[in-house]
Picture 1 (cartoon, rainbow, N blue to C red):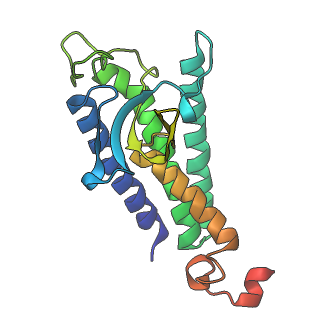
Picture 2 (picture 1 turned 60 degrees about the vertical axis):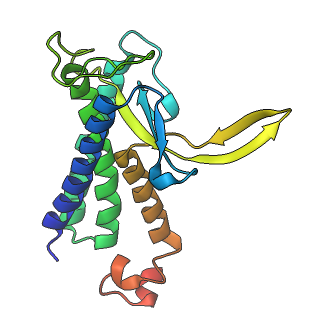
Length: 212
């Protein structure tokens, strides 16, 4: 299989799904609104906006958001270079899939950061829906948009002194999930899955070649 069309297909499909879902959530749900996925209590669509990095962390400075957006642009350039090198080196499809998912995730976050502040009105915290292409203009300038996340997974529920207490995994988008899947696949490649599926991760190599 030709590697560049394969990589381009993965990135394009993940980006299209992610952006379509984000636009729908942004324009049809209020901040904090949620509903179960297929009626399941362990998986929700839950609308939040992330102003910074993973887990809501952000750089506490006047230009913190701008610095973070520029850092993401730099990461995109580095990942694009790395993917190009891997394609030229005829890397395995398994390894390319890992980095394609990570690249797609980084690309989606930079799309949100760069353009969403210009394309959408703000999502109010006390009710109301955001608009796409509002007449009054967007809620922020270039490179200052918020990242939309929507996948929410309650992991542990307990009752303490009559009060429900939940320990929940962080909220993700399609592309954030793609980054995590890419990381998991990479580490699986390094240790768990590769010995079982050598033809996927090490094409043309024998078991003795893999260990060398």
